[in-house]
Image (tube, chains in turn green, orange):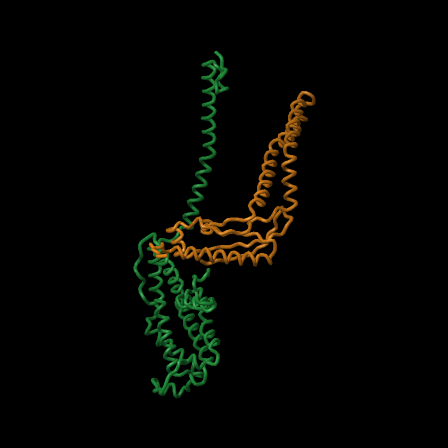
Length: 258
Length: 187
């Protein structure tokens, strides 16, 4: 039997030889698969186990557990309520400004701002309920929880940084005020709500408005404040203001910041 | 997004060159991670300089020598083995064993030498055909990335590039939080 014209040159033409060749070929393929598998399967298993361990070690904490941890830490931190905080804060502020007392209206504005900033931190408030899973809202919520944990992990330090930041900002600002915006300790203590014949915006009488604004802003940009995540909304607004002030015609694009 | 930049110097090029590297670790906030996942942004990338230094003269020479001489050593090993077999009849087993050992060693190690030379050559070619690297968000989430710098002064420029590109990437991520609604224009 001739093999001329056959597309398979391996075919000998004899059915017996072809069958033996096929059996040998199949046997070889089976051997190759078996020995290949003996090497590949353990390697595959080892890679799979390593990947699994890596995933297990780096997997994110589930949001409900993060929430529970945050609640626990918040309870143990025991931050004062806004009223309690304000009592303590005003005592400290009055002590600090004894040598350089501003007018009562300036002091009152400072107290109101301090109260608003403390309320905005939501340190003593219960956490909002959990958002739906696998959403962007959940990501934002997790960020809030992480920041809250950072603040409550060492509550005395957080309160200290809060006090010192506000205190430094106010003291530096008071130092920049003109004499017309200042008072004496006696007058300040005597008249808690003085009667004024006229009022004017304080910026109109500041000798160097830029220096006063800088004195007020710089403490909020310190590293300790940033590490704890305090005054986040205020710092975001300050960033935006700076961006707007440095762009002619106002900001048209979002701030490119890491 | 919190970015940590680290500078380091390392001896490279088979201990012939001092190279500078800029390592960058990107920690995404949970909101950013959620946006990346929900909007499918993991394959977005930034383009930076290569993480590997250019090959040194010593590396070129080593790869060339390994590629050129490995087959020759293989051939020598083969003929040494043949001579060892002949030597069994000429001088006995003791002498033949020594030749067999040398020939066998040459034959066994030749493919490894050639493979090392081939991989070195391939890596050097790749370094020149791909002068830039593409760092995806997926990679940033998994591990830090590295950029090679020819000198510490150039490292400052690399840091500026990283900051600029990551700032744009952050704007893309934050800007992708919400899908855009339908709009109709009268032009």
